[in-house]
Length: 89
Image (cartoon, rainbow, N blue to C red; front, top):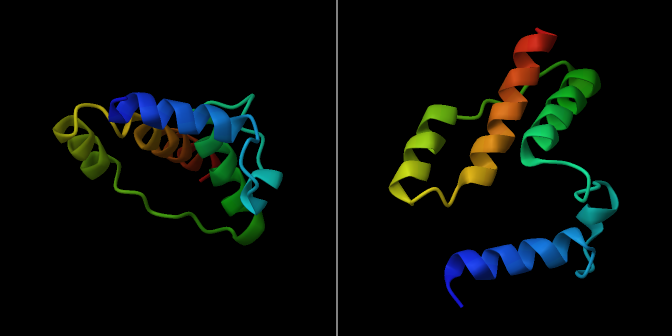
């Protein structure tokens, strides 16, 4: 099994609540894309403390290219976060 197949296997089982994890009680991964999770996190950050996190999108995109698109979930999350951050400012 290659690394991508293993990652997809773990992600699928995690999203289907196959792992006991306190974190999964607070998030519904089955109906959200990574982009939408970023949007939701930006809203949560804004409405809870009026501050946003700083994510280095260009650095992550560069790293994603270096690693053959293996960081696409992180890129999508940050893109969603930054999109919503611009809307809320």
